[in-house]
Amino acid sequence: MVVGDFPVEVDTLIIGSGPGGYVAAIRAAQLGQKVTIVERDYVGGVCLNVGCIPSKALIEAGHRYHNATNSDDMGISVGDVKLDFTKVQEWKGSVVDKLTGGVEGLLKGNNVELVRGEAYFMDDSTAKIMDDKSSQTYKFNNCIIATGSRPIELPKFKFIEGKVMSSTGALKLDKVPEKMLVIGGGYIGVELGSAYADLGAEVTILEGTKQILPGFEKQMSQLVSKRLKNKGVTIKTEAFAQEMEETDNGVKVTAEIKGKNEDFEADVLLVTVGRKPNTDELGLEQAGIEVDDKGLVKIDKQCRTSASNIYAIGDIVQGPALAHKASYEAKVAAEAISGQPTEIDYTAIPEVVFSGPELAQVGLTEAQAKDEGYDVVASKFPFQANGRALSLNDSEGFMKMVTRKEDGLVLGVQIAGHNASDMISEACVAIEAGMTAEDLALTIHAHPSLGEITMETAEVAIGHPVHIVK
Ligand SMILES: Cc1cc2nc3c(=O)[nH]c(=O)nc-3n(C[C@H](O)[C@H](O)[C@H](O)COP(=O)(O)OP(=O)(O)OC[C@H]3O[C@@H](n4cnc5c(N)ncnc54)[C@H](O)[C@@H]3O)c2cc1C
Image 1 (cartoon, protein in one colour):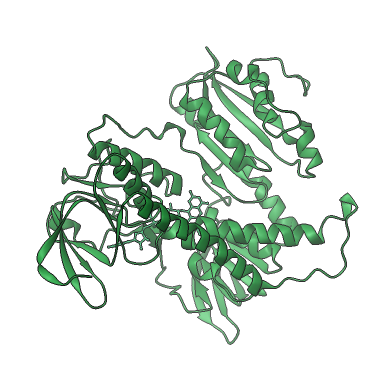
Image 2 (cartoon, rainbow, N blue to C red):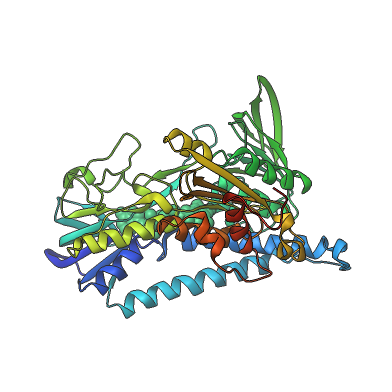
């Protein structure tokens, strides 16, 4: 990095290279801007390095191992199945490396300048970029902040290397723990807990509310609880972890469960109780950027902050902390800077849990639609009535479609079942395009495929399903 008193002048400065930042950089460059992106840690952000990608890789390794030892009903029995966890970790690392290398290549290919260091605002048009050795002032015309989030550390459950950890620590364990205790039954806790259960750990999940995955309908989360319990996972709901004590082998946690105290011992404690926006050490106040009481940056419909040339996207603004939401806002912000008449519309942002079975939802649930005053029809179709699901030997689950009664407009879709993460995309398109159940029912879907479930649920909605009796 150049050291000097003279500021380096840049056109559009992007802070953070996660799915928000790097996508914003590429889109802004495509629209003719001269872009500089700054990253203090890993290119690709949380998602590629310590989030979505490594967690999905670990989940897949768990599935393969679990299936290798649990396919007797399909006539497949294997003798000695071995798990080399070091190799699993190496493979996972190679997936991450491929993708982060790909992002660096894309930035370069779009002539985006990548600067390593930590950005700090001096005012609304200058930021200092610092690394261990030096500091350089950058003057920008426009800026997009995409600094993401970090795990919340609970005061009584401070992280201890190898024993008490966030998702980042849990993703880089060097061996499968014998006993893993998870505080927090949200999607990160459930995904990592079930991956390690598949890989052989004895897992317990403590969740404060009445169900794990509280953002999903009860019937959906119950399917996940049932599958986890079948794998030997213990789930305690309405359970509040109170104290922690270090032991020779790990930790002992005392939790209050429905008014009574219970102790849990584990060699590894994973704390996944939420994430905190990285907005506290950025000098935002010096640039005149307002944040709310949760530390989230306030933005308008074009992701513009209270400083008119500075935009904010991703985990540091309102809404679900998801990678695809960050990337979506990235495009809106980049286009807004380029003067395009664009604005955010969160109607069709899908939410997915890579649990067993997978859960996915988009748009409104039945209760939300009713709350918003819609007269609705809620239609369901079971995976058991789908040939592909049966041939995959994974037929537990259902799709639910919420449509407007007067005209069948698709308002929301919830799916619990195999590959729900992929199936939800069709529902996103339907909602985004303002399609009705009839449109979906009239669309020819390949047979046999899980996609047919969308067509069949739409047929239930319009009153004449073929493969279930009304
Ligand atoms: C275990 C786990 C699993 C997840 N799984 C999924 C999933 O399956 N699907 C999904 O959609 N989402 C998932 N997420 C959430 C997803 O990772 C985030 O929503 C997404 O990464 C947010 O993108 P972002 O661009 O806002 O920020 P981030 O990805 O957090 O990137 C921000 C970047 O900014 C850098 N930075 C911060 N401050 C500065 C500074 N001052 N100067 C320079 N650089 C800075 C950081 O180093 C970081 O690289 C998961 C998260 C975790 C933890």
